[in-house]
Length: 279
Image (cartoon, rainbow, N blue to C red; front, side):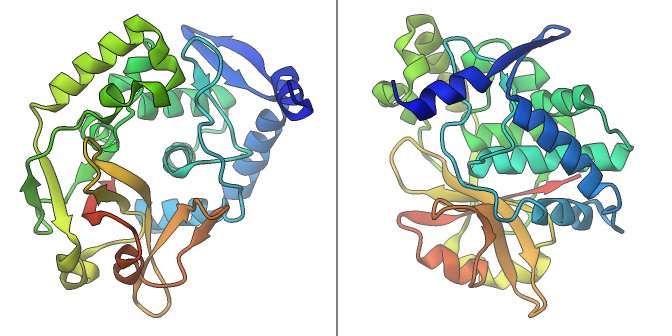
């Protein structure tokens, strides 16, 4: 076992809050309080503008994948030291909700994050996490956190089975457990009953003016069995163009150097976007 892994394991500890088990490090609790102090005066005219101001405070945070795949039992992982594209969106939304409601406690943050990350807000094992981002959008739409506006922007229904996890079991350590695997197959069976609406890549330029600061942009893909490969926030730059503020696989949270329309043309197998507006 490497020194890095050992150090990480030593830093991890468990917190029992109500019925939720939290995996966190002492450094993350310090970073939480620093973030609360950092965002306390960032409330803007609209929730979307406030959200973008919160998101910008994460710029430079390292990109780290699979931060939620910890231990042998699903827990609420709080990691502010490194983010992937989805955990970046979740953490920004959670902090923005705290800012909106004038809440500052760690427990309030944990509750917000759990509510956003898990189906109907309940942590009930690995399959309760909203792994597929279209499922994430749909469920958070039902919770009242976001509104899927893809259809009204001109999105089109795509016939596509979403079953990547079930057909690539070996890529997900938690699916080595047969019970977890069977529950994920059930989730995918339920997803098969849902419609997938995508705004085609060649139609995005015509609706760019309708996008707003803070809109969650999910990148749809042609990869078999997969709905979305990446996500981030729409941010309108001084030029008037929409760019993407995201946890980039290239290394850190950043803003794309080129507008979203041009950025998408460089993403392999991208077919368009799904847009969810935070409420």
